[in-house]
Image 1 (cartoon, one colour):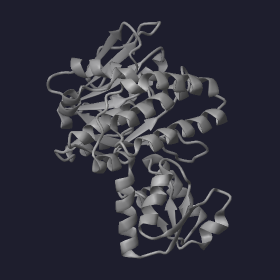
Image 2: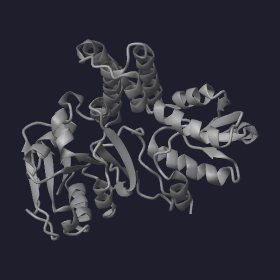
Image 3: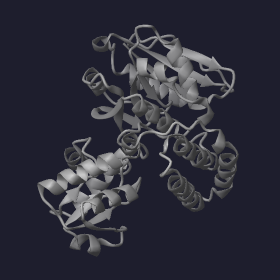
Image 4: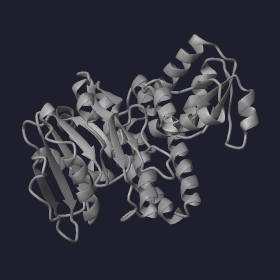
Length: 381
């Protein structure tokens, strides 16, 4: 049995759209049934919802006395039926596109704590794009199935994060517990990404603080200073571009006063390399190089953890440079093109673009976790 769980606050239309999408999946008999639990994070107008969907799935709303952020999901998990084995985490504006989820959780190995969905965004002018964020073993909270026993064993989401990077924190604890986080493209979720109630100043405030918290908790000692500097620098550039420097500096002030209070439980070197994606980049690039060596490479579409991708390539002795969108001539001269992001969604998008822009060129992915070429060709079509 599974439980669909998501928090919400004053987005009634989106909640109903998500419920309609879940309803369209049918009775869920093949997975032993399902239920829907919604945490209303102290909304100003109570949710008026049916007690069950037309497909027979019961719906329960848990009224929270205050806005608990993402951690309101914890209350839903505690309230779930004792028969529930998998928790399908959504946002109030995301929903599964089909029943591929059922196959994904059925085939998950016993060491898999979470199955990450392939999360797409609404098409614009017919073009399919994917949700940003996440890493090979860091799930995205708007589309993931989590094994309930692991979630409860680890204590769920840390409420101090509010929103943003809470998935990184829980993913790190899963890795530390000896679990894996898998990606299964059969599990497809659309994130409508509605902009109401989204304040980018508040978002960047949480992003800089929370991502630095994750590093303060889990980075090995030798990595911590450089990783913290990378985080505060990255979000400064983002905040400046988005004109949200006020939120950024508020987040930095919060970070300075709270970082010493973070529980220091560093991962092992192997575990941290899995969390950051470096281990996956090394494996993928080494495999591609072993199949057909290349001496020069251009890293294109640089994004999430591009420095780790460059590092993995240089460890193989490859002469590599990062190329921006206007540096196509440099990319053409390289023997191979390496996609420059470890975030699964942008990796697929960049590959689809590269197949069109550089026909016939050898393209190397920094992660082997998806049948990306097949998906990207379908996406490009």
